[in-house]
Amino acid sequence: MKDEVFIESPYIQDTPIIRGEDAKRFLQRMMENHKETPEERDRREADYEMIMKNSEGYL
Image (spheres, rainbow, N blue to C red):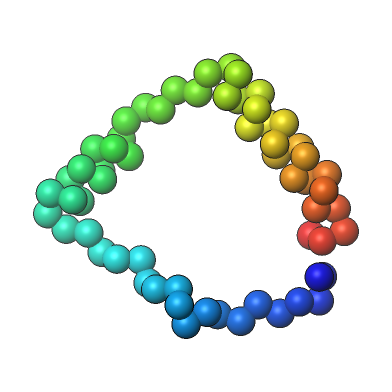
């Protein structure tokens, strides 16, 4: 796994450029303050720790 070579896939397309109302909605959504509950944070941190533990030797 460590020596695998990943070749760019021809099926992955460029990220589209958004304009007009779509762009306005996107910017408004990005400016919103998304609160994270303590339970969500604990879950996210536990998931991160598990991934880092399981990925030792690959990074």
